[in-house]
Length: 164
Image (cartoon, rainbow, N blue to C red; front, side, top):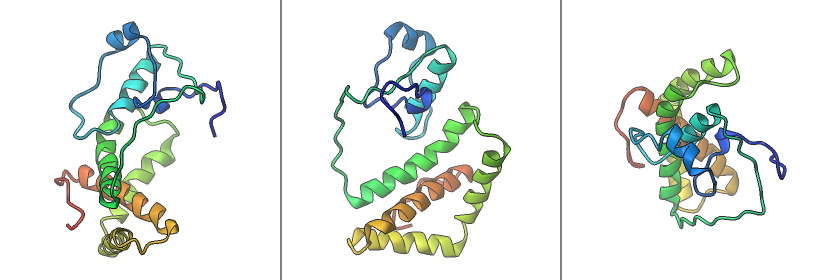
């Protein structure tokens, strides 16, 4: 939904392809190394810089390549860890969007703890690992992976493996 030259703000501060003045970065502070995994710490920096006046724009002609050749397991694990790190992100960044969004997160975190949802998640992972899953299966499996990670972090559970 981004158009060339549009203002995107700190929520799009993906450090695989972003440019910022060094003086602003040094003034705003570097990455918060207390994030549990390499996930969302760049968005948190983007939020801090945006509050200090950074204006980030989308320029599709400026390319950067950041290749990761990931297995099915690695993609699912990265998504799970993204959800796990979301707790740390939302502790540091105020929620945009109001009361409904504040209420949805704990509800979704509670829902994915249900035995039936855990079973569906594991079955979906297994199907994706065997390459039996259609592309339509990927979105629900990755969405569940995110929310299971979020739920585990919210309950202060250790990071799980795909088998657990």
